[in-house]
Image (cartoon, rainbow, N blue to C red; front, side):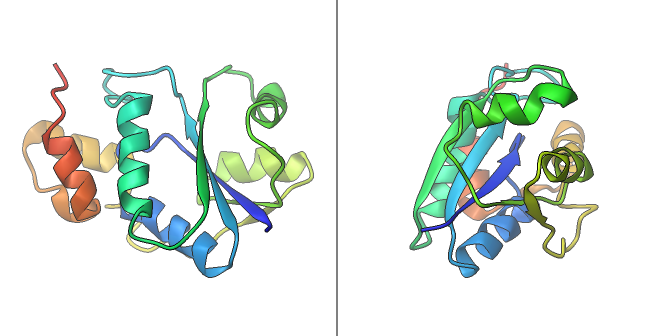
Length: 158
C-alpha cells in the first residue's frame, strides 16, 4: 500500500488536520503522521506533550477504517537538513499532504510530490487561533473534533 505523510504539531489537533487525514484516507493511502516539535510541551505555542497529541490522533483515527502509524519528530531548527532528519525517523512514503507552505517548499525541493487539499475555514482551524481562544475563554470546542475536546478537557496544563 502506498504511504502518505502528514506532518504537524497538532497543538491541538483540529478540524483542518482532520480534513487532511480524510483526504489521505479517501485517496487510499496508508497514513504516516509525523508529530513535529515532539519534545516541546507546556509552552505557549506547544502546550501539549507528544503523548497527549498522539492520544488525540489515535482518538480521531479510531473512527476510520485506515492504516496509520505515528512518529515523533524532534526539532532540529535547520530547514536545509529537515527532510533528511525526518527521513531518518519515518519509513519511505510516496506523497506529502500539507496545507503549510514551508512544508510544501522543503519537501518539493527534496523531490517529493506534495498534495495541497483545499483547506476549509483556515482562519478558525489553525492551532494559534484555537490556543488564543482557549487562553481568553472564547469558544474553541467547535474547531476540534469532539473526542479531542474531551481529551483536552482532561489535561492539566499547569
